[in-house]
Length: 289
Image (cartoon, rainbow, N blue to C red):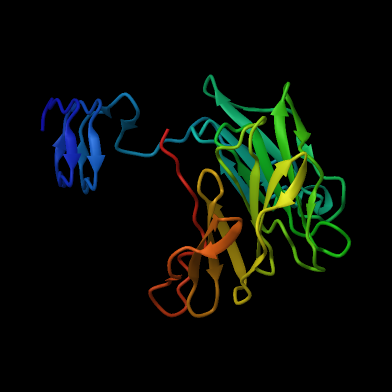
């Protein structure tokens, strides 16, 4: 298709594999179950919402750690439009940990506010991070926080060019619980609206909290006890949460839904296809802007 005009086209269940798209216009096109395998774009293909090029290109320069053993890329989270990134560095300052947030503007990554520092040694603060869609609220997990290693979660908002904590720390209720091992924040959260954070602890305890002057748990705990490592993600309002479990044989994912003030499993368990398969351990969520 050379200089094809697909403006407002409905490309539903279409297969345009092995196509050469030269200067094609896709403005307003509708896509559903469309196959784009092995396309050769000999020039840019553009629309109002996106540009497709032949290769991935780095945005700005690399963001480096601030000191030796900083472990800068331990945890990362992007805003909805991809221009703000939160970076957790749990190994900084004798494993006190810290989090930095950067915004991409004028072709440069610039730090937003000061570094968010932890005050206690070996908390692993920044082991997990999660941004809201606007990039103005960040949830930070510190699974080795507190003297009993029950762990903690801290949530911060960006107002007047500074990061300020929202409420008190959310702390684990059990010794060596390691709450904050993985966290997910509702992407729809706003500074003046609902803020909901879910966590899977190092012991496989799923908990969700909502902020209304204080942090209050939503529903009861869900215990997942047969995994060695866990990951978590949620829908935009944190009423549906997916848990990835890296277990020995094989890994699996469970999805839970919050309804009528209670959490219940949503659908069946999704198992790895083969023995000892662990492909479902890492996942994230993407939003169409």
